[in-house]
Length: 170
Image (cartoon, rainbow, N blue to C red; front, side, top):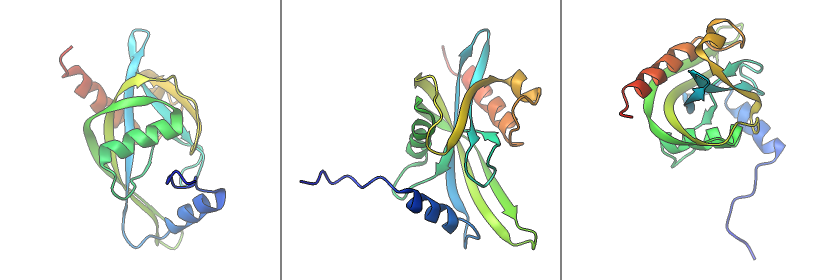
């Protein structure tokens, strides 16, 4: 008797999806989850180390490709949970950014339109899973010090999340 749930994708399925994203005909919509929580006297943000290309080894916010029929908020919170086990409540979008990579011949190899969604932490400590090689709660000082090789957009998005949180009633 079937429970009507789709089967988990195989490694071959995932590899085929990643290959299909190379040299796209149009931008691919992806979502990022920007989640803060207190760490001592400071706020920390959750970041993950990318396991797959593009940008394997670099640190950024949990995220991935938006699925058909999924809202931006739901997609960001799904990716957060899949990559880290963290549960958060979506609290609006922070920014939109285009990530475009060209190959040596100048052809567009990857083009993602990234929508950053602020998440309010609910539960979980963070464990690397799915497309994440590692995850960590880091402070602004950690990022400024270069402790983690991050994307140039990480610090501005962290600052936007801090500003959004500061404007929320307590």
